[in-house]
Image (cartoon, rainbow, N blue to C red):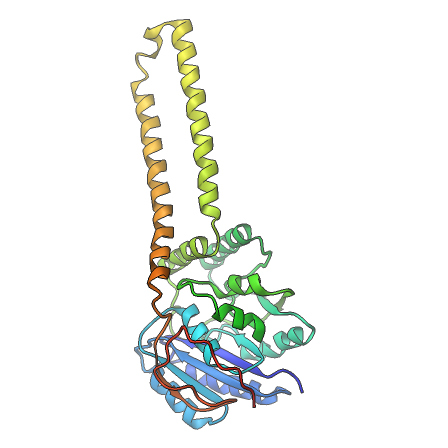
Length: 332
């Protein structure tokens, strides 16, 4: 029998898209030649999405499990909650806005069946505005350079992971994480496939420009020490240039006399301010790391699960579970 699959979808204020999302996911699941379940995680929605997820679990018993978080913990922590409560041998993630068509899931499963541990996706003919495409391209480029993993579309959440990769991610204790990058650290074979992309069916994106910028800071500070190393090289280069400039000033003063540098006060002030700016940048980057160290030392749970509705492939965990628990591995 082929590996079972859990379709894991975080939901945050997607009431307008949920009816179509659930209908299409159930239709796709029923066509799969393997056991399947749909895990829906409400990430602190305030538009009635959580009530719709509870009703969906009651309407589709044995197929849908709805997890209701007590507040918003962020997309990636919601997905980790879904992973911890899913029972499939393969996990497929996608967004709830229907820009990732559920009908593309069989393509990812076919790649998993070919022996890949992680299957990413590249959005073909992407239906987003130019500014969002440009910003996404910059982020993807920075992530590739920072992590050394040459994948081209980290922003697309339509991805598939084998159970052993998911179990390894669940053992990680950092509070800030980025699942596509983290998964690649534990995968032996990784691939990407092109998938369709649709315009948002309804509602507004949950990722504003500010959130995308914050996501980039999360990526740089929680997944790599590259910024610190870059800061070291930049600081060394600035210091070398400063020494060279000081030697030049000394030489000119000796050759041309002290009067030559009498009017160079503002130049020295500009150099001073440049160094002050560089120090503030260094302190800001160090502050990002210190803040994340502080969060990890406190070991607060990634999420608090408020309610579980519905049973799928295995026994439902007890209510009120905390996000650091390691899931039981059972399979019907």
